[in-house]
Amino acid sequence: MSRSAHPAGPRHADVLPEGHYSAPPTDLNALDAKVWAETVTRDTDGVLTVGGIDVRRLAEEFGTPAYFLDEDDFRARARSWRTAFGDDADVFYAGKAFLSRAVVRWLHEEGLNLDVCSGGELATALSAGMPAERIAFHGNNKSTDEIRRAVEAGVGRIVLDSFQEIVRVAHIAQELGTRQRVQIRITVGVEAHTHEFIATAHEDQKFGIPLAGGQAAEAVRRALTLDGLELIGIHSHIGSQIFDMSGFEVAAHRVVGLLRDIRDEHGVELPEIDLGGGLGIAYTSDDDPREPHEIAKALTEIVTRECDAARLATPRISVEPGRAIVGPTAFTLYEVGTVKPLDGLRTYVSVDGGMSDNIRTALYDAEYSVALASRVSEAEPMLCRVVGKHCESGDIVVKDAFLPGDLAPGDLVAVPATGAYCRSMASNYNHVLRPPVVAVRDGEARVIVRRETEEDLLRLDVG
Ligand SMILES: *Cc1c(COP(=O)(O)O)cnc(C)c1O
Image 1 (spheres, helix red, strand yellow):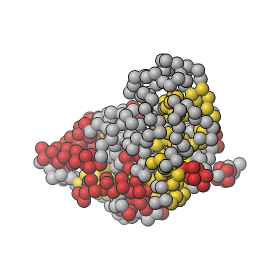
Image 2 (cartoon, rainbow, N blue to C red):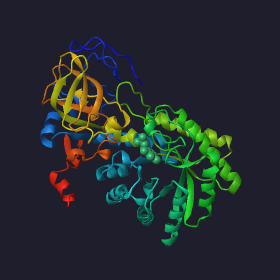
Image 3 (cartoon, rainbow, N blue to C red):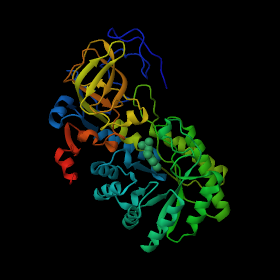
Image 4 (cartoon, rainbow, N blue to C red):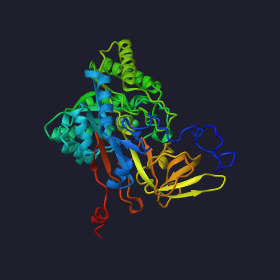
């Protein structure tokens, strides 16, 4: 992924240190629409605004760091997935990307379904009124208590991830006098084109039951014999932040192959196939994600073609985008605390958050972009690393980015595309308080997840 280095502005040596940066943009004040939420723009004073509200006002009212989420953009993206797939397919939003009660209500209103993978996510979904039959329950080690709650609530499906779980869910459903609709998650031996820590369908990993060696077929055999289970389909999730559709093509081919074998062996045609999530978004200007309608068309064509070849009726398709819906809709707003130039290297810009509100850079070497938000500047670009306030040198938010050379303490900077896997992976490292999520729409901003307080921390500390 390494890109060519280019000469930087006057504050740095001719040869830049190694890194993942492109040339300094010609206009640092320009906003690339690809990486920013739909309503983000600069007002006439050059201040970043979202939903018509200026970030200086937002910072004053809600403090920093904070995530600002463009509600209209979220709804529009959810809707475009829904309409792209139409009535013959189901879109399940992956709650782990970011879940709150407001989000659950938006999804419900926009006609989407919801994936959860823990008791906490299930409780959030149910408490915000998501009908249980529109919830899918995932995870490679659901506790018996979680399974019981999910079955009792009447979730639409449980995605089975191991042989033990097949038996466990069957027993619990029988005990409760019901038949649980289930899918079996298989691994199809596809490695998505993405960072290895977030690729999940090659076989040497904890998720799913391998297709290879006949394990998946054996899982189907067992599930079909258990009274507590109604096997409705096969599930495959091949990775995350994927741009290349060829992984889905191979996955669909193999899943449909299994459906054909199931028909041949058992005389049953399973009615559903779930191709998971993992569709990529633009974190920087170098990323070129596809539109939901292109993805829907491609996936539907692949599955239909494979089923025709196997002489199977095309099953109902479901998909599980998380990042692709919520990721682009939010940015994190930080205040700059210190600016530390290191001669011949780069300038370290410390902000008032860090790995506690965005662990992805440290965890996956993820790339982000950043912009000066509280004003525009005509200063020369300087090569920066935006870092947090934690006691960890890997506490990096944006590894390599150009910011104006006159950046100073008190400036606000915004990191776009932080809607997914940032607040949901946030921690209290260093007893830092997790930031709020503020939804902005039509000139109004409201907190949907409040900022943590020191009382919240001390309440848990009962020693
Ligand atoms: C993580 C995950 C998703 C969502 O992935 P995104 O990259 O956010 O689209 C969907 N399905 C399953 C089973 C997952 O584990």
